Length: 171
Figure 1 (cartoon, rainbow, N blue to C red):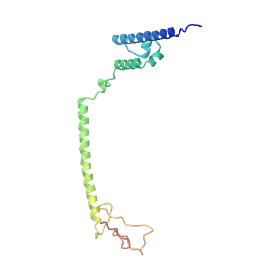
Figure 2: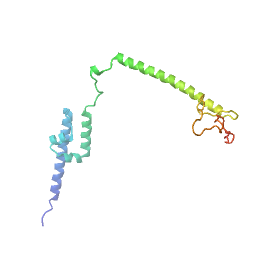
Figure 3: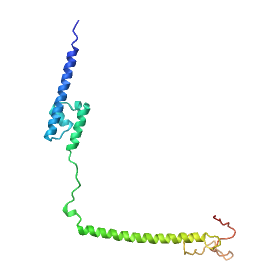
Figure 4: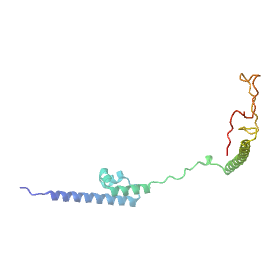
């Protein structure tokens, strides 16, 4: 019967794994101290390990990503060429134009609110029982009906509601 030598194989595999890991960690520290850009490919190349092995090492991969993100330059605000920059005079004119527009819009808004208030007041007054007119648009007369439907035997249309139509009374 042969002797079981598997323990030697397992021990050798464990030592190789520890050596590989130590090589990767020391290379990672050296690259970081030197200020080199740390990526999976660059670490794999310098530490003489495979990228697939690095991908399976969660802690090393996380550290590589953290160092890579830290050393990546952050984009700053875009620099506008001097010829395209707005001058202080130009900015002042734009500010004045905006202030004028705001003033006009506020004035128009006030006029519209007044007109709406008057229209609603006239409508409310028209809904009071006993008054003769019921128009949607204030201060506007209904046009006279002309055409094939109007003839001399019919009475002219009036702006007052006919007594044959029931009026709804609101409480």
